[in-house]
Length: 192
Image (cartoon, rainbow, N blue to C red; front, side, top):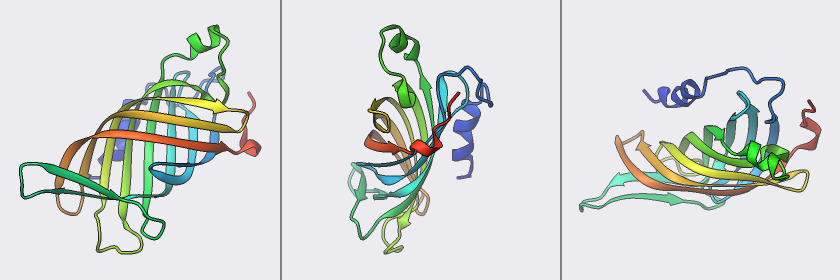
């Protein structure tokens, strides 16, 4: 069942599987750090407005559980000594790049505003596997990505998330938030 969580975003975003040659979006590899950890990402366009981002990294551990009370809770734990493995697929629909270009604003490094759908797997804590749980998070969000010079970008997004505890079947809705800064590797820059 859990393998379908990774397939759904790809099916929803498969309007055009192959990037068109005149697409203004480009393929970039980057390393990032933010409030949800750090890792490596590959951005690749699916068409002129849709971008997919594949990500692996380390970040906070999650524990979704049902309290004894009526309230539900989701906790996360982030220390340098207790990280979890993270892997995600992120589809981004850019809706304002033409307006940015018309206003003379930068499109460098896939800058623009987007609506995104992210599916993310988070493992148990790598240092203490008995603590926390294997978790699937699915987020629908609004975000923006902007370049900071020729090799740096920042990315901000917020929206609604759905979390599922894979070890003790339990799920919940939560507010999703992400903020990160990334270095884009210049030696992988694809000139078109």
